Structures are given as C-alpha cells and as structure tokens.
Length: 201
Image (tube, rainbow, N blue to C red; front, top):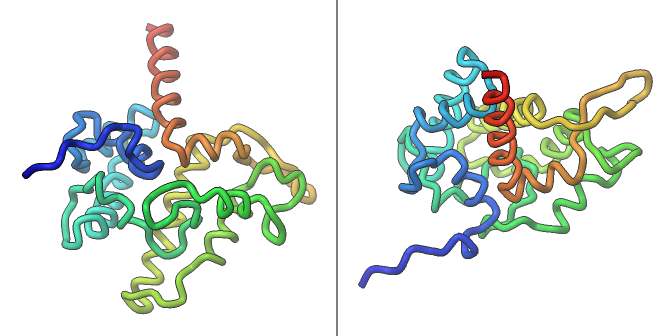
C-alpha cells in the first residue's frame, strides 16, 4: 500500500530549504533547476553555472547513495556532510542548541547578534568530522565544498556589517540566518527580486 505524501508541515526545516530548488515539486532537483533557482536569486550566469554542477555533484551522490546529478529532496538529510554548521539534527530539523552555539565564544566576537564569514567558517571547521569516511581526499573535498556553500550564502544574504579590529566586515544577523535555515529566506529574496525587476521594466 502506498503512503500518502507528506504534508508541508511534516517536512523538516532542511527539506523545506531544499524545496526552494524544486519548483515543480517532483522531489528531484536537477542541475538546470539549481541553476534557475540561483539565477532567480540574482547570481550571475558565469558563477551560477559551475556552482549548480558542483552542488548537484556533491548532493546528488550523498542523497541518492550513488553517483547522480539529481538531488533527492526527501533524502536531503543525507546530504549533511563533514564541515557543516551542525545546526540540523539527523532528522533534518533545526537544532536550537546548536544554532545558539554559533553565536557563542570562542569564535563569535561581540556583538554576538551577527556573524561574519570568518566566524561562521571557524565554527564549521571546528565541527569537521575527524572520522571522514572517504579519507584525506574526501576531507579536502568536504572542506572545499563547505567553504563554497558558505561564501555563496554570504554573497547572497548578508544584511549587517561587523567591526572586527579595524575591519568592517559583511555579516549575517541571527534573525536572517535563522530564516535561511528554516527555509523561509530564499523564497522571500526571490519574491523581492521579482518585484524589483518588474518595477524596472
């Protein structure tokens, strides 16, 4: 007997986040859909193209358990990899304690209501899995992929600046980072960009 499709409220935060890249709702994200979603957020084609291939290459393999360029949305929790922020639990739900820990010392400096790239990256490196199942090469690739994910995030959604020493650095507020992890931020940014473009037309 087939199971009824899960209702939106039954989906974990990580799955809701992934569904942004699945506009037709078929549960699979192709490189073309990843590319289209990033273009809808304003990422230029020369950058979005290679990013789409890299993202689908990594997450397709992790979510499907085999080499594939198609990401399985319902299995996105399997896409958790070493050197991640650690804010999603095994079920793909937002772990409130892990999220709060992002803003605590020693990596987060005052004011602690926002994080710079360096601060969040330091936390992610601290969370690196010492038991990387794919050996040294897998560890290097995981580090590189997580850095790429994080850099793209900061390029897209920074909403603050933070003074560290004599440097004023782009930062993400706690509120915006939470909305990103809960899957609410990217659809909101896409709507805002559509409105902006329609006004210019």
